[in-house]
Every structure is written in C-alpha cells, then in structure tokens.
Image: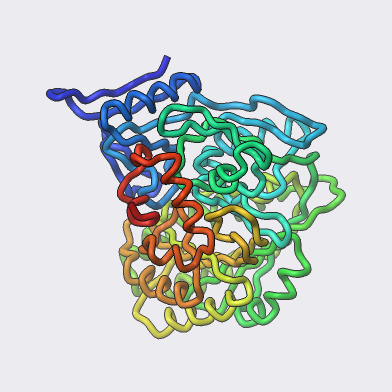
Length: 444
C-alpha cells in the first residue's frame, strides 16, 4: 500500500524535504509513496480533487526547486526495477524510481549497458532524464536522448504511453519534461551489449587544452576536462572504446585518486578554504598538480561515473560548441581580475545535437561549462558573473542546476519553446503539476 503523510485543518504538516545540496527545502501537505501505478494515478486524482499541486521527487540531486511543493510530494522509490528486456530491439524498460546505480549493476549482470551516462549515478532514472542529466560525448548524447518510450500519468490520472509511434508529440517533449507534463512511471531505454572503455586521464595546461579543444573533441568518443581557477592548470579525461580486457586502477591508486584526493582531502581543502578564502589560490595551485596521469580500462559505468561525496552548489550552461573556448577564456579572465576565491574546478563537456524539445542540446551541437561552489560558501557573486558571460553566448542553463533565467529568456534560446508550453496547456491546463519554479521558467 502507499504510505501517506497528511495535514488536515488542525493537523500537523509533514517534515520538510531537503535536496542533496541543502539549498532547497519544501514542506508538503502530504507525502505519497505509491506501490503501484494505480496507486500513483489515484494519488494524482485525489490531489487534484483536493486542490493540491503534485510533484514527484527522486533522490534530490537537482539544485533547483523543480520538485518543491507545498502540495502532494510523490516519492516513486517503490516503483523500481527492470520490467522488461528486449534483446532483439536493444531496449530495457525500467520503473521510474529505479536509481541509476541499481540499473547499471543490473544491466551489467545481463551483459548490457547504456551507451553514455553522467558522472554520478545516485539519481532516479526519471529524475535524471526529466532534468537533462548528461555526460560527455562526441556522438552519444544525454540519458534522455537514449529513451525509446515512456509512460506518463497526466493531470486527470490517465496513464499515457509515449514513443516515436505512439503519442509522438508528447514523446518529443516528455523525455525531458521538468515535471511539467505529468509523473513518469516507466522508461524504455536503448541499450547495447556490454563493452569496455579505456580512460586516459592527463594533466594539461589551460592554454594547450583550449587551443587543441576541437582536435581533442574530434579524436575522442568522450572528452572532458576540468580547469582549476586561479591556475593555468587542467585535468583532461579521454574515454574511448577498446577490446579490453578490464584493467581497472589498482586498489591503492584508486583509493588515492578517487577517495583521498577527490573526496577526503578535497573535503578538507574546501572546508579550510571556506574558513580562510585568502588561501584558496595557493591551495588551488597545489591541488591542480596533485592528480597524476593514469590509464585504465573497465565496463562503462565504472569509467563514466565516480563517487561525489563533497557537497556543492552548481550552475551549468550549454553553449554552441564552437563558442565554448571563447566563453571559457572570458570566464577565466573574469576570475583572474576579480576578488573571487573559487575552490572547485570548472568542468567542460560536450554533446551532439538531439531532437528533444527542451533538451539543452536541442537542435545544436553543444558544450557545457559547469561552475561549482562548496556547500555553505556564498556563491551568488560568482554565479552571477558566470551567468552574465554564458547568456551572452545564447547559453541554455541545465534545468536541474542553479540559474536565474525565465520564460521570456527561454523563448529566445529554444526555437521549440512554444511547442512545449502548448503541450503543457493541453495536458495540464489547471497546472496540477505546477510550482513556483515552473511558473518562472515556463510562464503561467
């Protein structure tokens, strides 16, 4: 049965919900954890009847208030697991509350894999796709772009099945729906036989990586790099398919790189930097030289993803790929001449164009610049200055990360924006799935 927290006229409200980063909270009137799609449909109908808004929330890895509500909060964690595998079609259907980590493990046991994925796997599949989670890829796109079908509970409780052949206009938008069109209950992904990736991580000067960016992108299936502010140093990562066999990092090497340097020591360094901001440039110069070159081979999710236990707040914009180096150089110049003290590296990734209505890569080859600040550190000045640069290049902010853009801005950078809002008007005219965030980014 579904578990429900209620708040009547004289009752107490449910406990506050907080996202992973701690920058967003909400106190819903009730929380529902449906054990079946039928229970979810009934929860939506009941909420609409009670005049309450409905939002579904995954594991809270979004930095925006996309899932925040004072109405009914749907937690889909009981709707989890693989529902079907079609090896002939190369697809797998999973319930919406399935966590990516669990999906990756289950697929590997079946000798299967997603083609591309982001760098963490703590999100639910519905949360990750609905906000546009992506990795980096020359030819392979975001997780949402790997969707071949989905099921969606709409505002009147109807279960809608969507694909390129069935309700194609909904499918075009709902793969990345920001929670505005309904509650996703199941997703069918394209998968392929398990393969190996060889990762090559290598420090590289900022001037070299920016000068050779186009070549590095063209020569590698998955290329990304991190620039350490207050330095001229970067760390690059190139992932390409290989014949194997698996040759993962040694236990000691993995612990030093992934746990000590990237989590344990990094946590301590950021805590110290928050207390003593003046020390950050010196720390950055040391930290940027701590990581050494290494090469290893493993199955995809073990190469694409890594643990991220140091909490932060993030802004990320998608720019036309041909403009990203220019924008990054401008960002570096801004940081260099400012009094800002930035302890987190800046991440740069790429994606091919896709055909999803509100995908950040919709209709154009894209590159992403992500800026971060350690949790508890004032981030507004840095993010405001970065956002000013990104918007000058027609940037599209990640739907699940901090930004200040509104519907008027999005109508200018998304040629199909009106197509999405018209569909929303049809599927949810009473804004059952609305909240303040959607009112800002989509209009009302």
